[in-house]
Image (cartoon, rainbow, N blue to C red; front, side, top):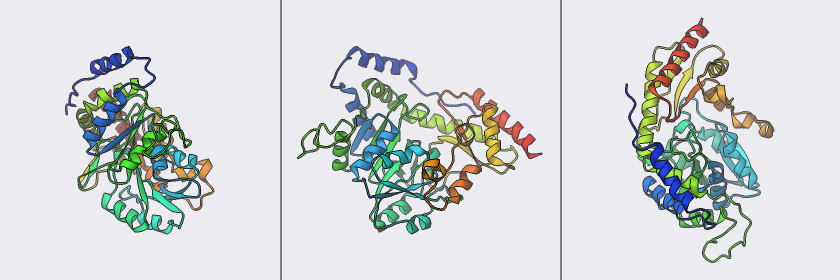
Length: 369
């Protein structure tokens, strides 16, 4: 299998970046972030995109725009990273952790329904590893309980299910452009929404409430500085112009690696759901070996980067700051304890992927004995 060539690369990024740097310093930030927002909205097929400084800032901004604050509760999967939860805590809201279904990786909606109270205002579905839950089930649950939907699509740019793009199902979708994401700018993020009022709030919130939404005075509310710097916007804009190719490359890399591991003992690839157009963010395999988490950690030590082994990903409800929140979410723990999610970047060549596969297969064979 030959990986596809992605046109562009370093030269157009360098040229775009140089053009912006020549215009600096510019206290206004220049036009590049605005152009990025217009192009993001067109690419993802939504009316509004707002660029911000990080994926965390996108969530913080989006939750504020949805009116989340002190006294509110927000449903959030335990199957996520702490960066999903930090923004809602910063706004004074309370995270309520919801379990996930090990068979599908989707939210356990029965568990979610049990945890809805009169204080619940929103739900944050997390498309971890680019995998997307059932959009119809999400929409129906949110509608039944009157909840805003703030999608954490940080890893899901390019994924769709049932014809709906990740980040466009709910009230607002949030993305990261940190290095390693398919659409990257070194650091940065953006949010997508169909609602003008949400976009206007987000635009004000990221810049100390200026420009303010119509009918409000600038600086009349406390907000943040989470603008996307012009050089990073320039990198993002250059990469957005080759986004389709970057998604196809990641999918091809994942296919290549999973194909090479088809005969590895104790490892079974996790196929996407029916009608899910997965972006292939990370090669996902279920570990059926003894002590599966220890195996993932061992692979990381052998040079195969992966979520649980390299970054010690655990259910968010087991983090020290959240361990007083009730019974742990066992489905999320089961998923992570048996997950091998191999971390990929666009720089990974066939040689790199074949090395990952060879090391993984060799170590799996030895581990199984």
